[in-house]
Length: 255
Length: 219
Image 1 (cartoon, rainbow over the protein chains, first blue to last red):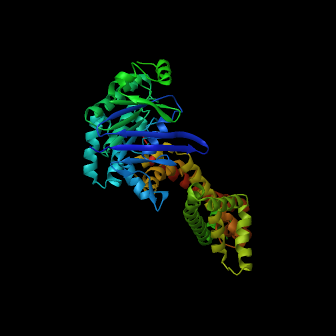
Image 2 (cartoon, one colour):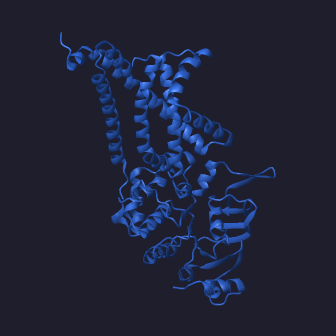
Image 3 (cartoon, chains in turn blue, purple):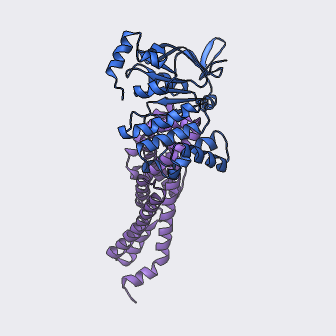
């Protein structure tokens, strides 16, 4: 079976600072991969390259066999047209640390915007889908509320519904619980667990080690712009092979 | 013959009304043209490529650093020397519109830049193109943000319209002065003109508040 996502020799620089120094990663459909590592290790950057929120200078990312963001014509690597990049971005869904809901739109309108403008759905169809997914994240009763009227955990769940309603091939979660009060973390993690059980392919950047352990089929430990170690969480968390991962796990909290 | 103010006001009603009409049309034209121009100025300041950005930055800084009266005089007298002959009304409106555009441009730039980057990223992440992101995500938020300051600018334009009396546009102030030179009731008629300007600006302000309330995001 072909791979859903293939990352080959990914290099990313900010000016002269190299943050990704050759990352290789392969992901099959239905896999749930958690990316862990200390801050500055490049895990969020790697995630953001996959939907071209960050440009990258070397390597390739392939989703469903199609190269993301760049094409090589006559030996010259160049950025794809913006329209094509926008189309490719819709193949992945992303949830952000800061939720980034559109504050001037109700929960329903947040979910419907992409459906109507990108997927070209009619309003009724889009509204029905918004109802379905907001119900799924437990917020059907808040469907006409605005982000300012929702708690952080509720906002994040709406944001996840907004991404997932687009029916993406791959979901990207970028530290989605880091900005939440501790008592609101769990409601968001439960939603992600539910999606994992549905067989959604997911890449999850997280600091929640217990969650990564429970939900992931595989864990990637990023260290200084490279993959330091990867494998089954049940082995990695119990018996880390590298010194760096052992240190990182020691300094992390499992709760 | 009666010399009371109300009688004189009645006698002068048509010239004053005409002047009021001219003042309103000066204000409206310069606000509309200036706002449209200003939106482009703001977009260029925010999203323009380097050389364009510098050019427009120079334009706004220059215009905002120049007294409106100088702009009005330059537009009427200087443009004529280079072969562009505008009537006093057109020259005046041009000057006010240019002045308005530099202020609106700054408002638009400020409003757009105050929107967190995450908004653009979230819009990109669901596959919106930049024009769509602007139309549905950034624009509506920037409009709400810029509205109060824009209302201020609009009121400023109404006040600045009086400067056109200098180049002979028969707007409310000039008409008032003509009436005063005939009746010598300077206190009464200046007060009356001031009252009319106040009513216009108060109306603009109330309207702005109303739109603000109507478009407020629940929280």
